[in-house]
Image (cartoon, rainbow, N blue to C red; front, side, top):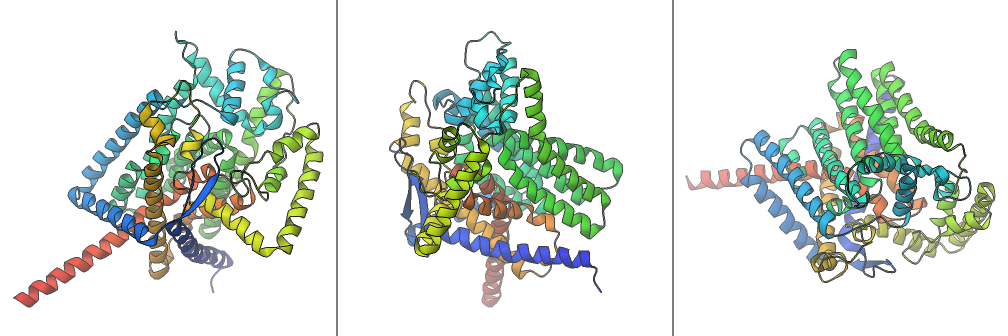
Length: 530
């Protein structure tokens, strides 16, 4: 009789197998039929366009044929090929990122500028930004980790004899973070699938990942945080797949803990991916009867919980002042149920202005938010058709925007852009950019669906370890979270990146299957002639 731990583990694997299949169908169907984008960069209202099926099919077919032809052209000597492709990819992001720094002229704006300004003040010795009521951090204390990261880099930048603003160096460093992200995600794919063809396809997809390239010039926490998370995930998967004893596991454990801690510090939303890591760690520990993995899962939980409070305590001690608890999380949930000018559930200022109107009283803001949530639930209950429309629009606006709001996020300019980049961001080339991003997203969703179908049909694949589903667990968690949290397609970027490994394997499996069929057909035709 199977032990309870084995039964729980098998149920978890089966749940993910069916869940991936449903998620794959949902994402591909919606991505295939719809495209969401912003046309007016002032209002940034999210528009939804219906994609003509024939155009979508043509785009997918041409793209897949292109990938296949490129693969066949460079197919000999897989290891050398992929090594060269990886170097070329990193070089492309270096050159492309530097060009964006020089000519796109993106500067921090909105929250990004507020965090940067606080860091700059601290670097100058002004600790007044650590204040319970008179500071940006009074509203959003969770930004202390990103602020600390900026402060360190600004201090180093000011040691140099230059008058250029420090945010320029932050964009340059983002380029290297993007390269780190790509490198360690590539290494994770090698551990997960051990398929040279999937490795190649991942590199080819990454070459045309325009949103990620544009986000290197976005001065905020997305890129460095996800890069650090990618390092931690690689070390975690390596620990689960290649652990050879205590001595060999010390380094991966240290890398995991430090990378995950830094990732959470730079972007609090990384807590969602961390929940996925913790779930896999604890369930794998249960199946393998491993106390080490169980303790590691608990350690991940502690790191996720206490990293930001520790950083906040350091700054409060340094400034001899305390920060308020800030805007309560429940106000984001309330705002996520409201209409907004940009789209259903997008930012409309409710959380900020409610907190401000209550005299920065967290408890009073929470009470008002709960009342708003109750009122919206009543409205949705009385009008289920409207509720379905609201959450349908909210879902599409986030998961069917292949650009992940990369143009809106990096729109702020100083002195104007060059004509070419202005055309890409909001001029005559913007529709071409949106179209290319949409095709790329369709390829990723199709590849993920193909992988999910393969896992569902292949009996041997069903015996796989739960860590193979780690990225899918994170994506599912992110989908559920952002359906009730504030909406923004920018928040979906990390989840889109996590789907690329599955898409690469799915497309690789399809190409292998087609190659086998074509080879068999030619062989049969040749035998008939003879």
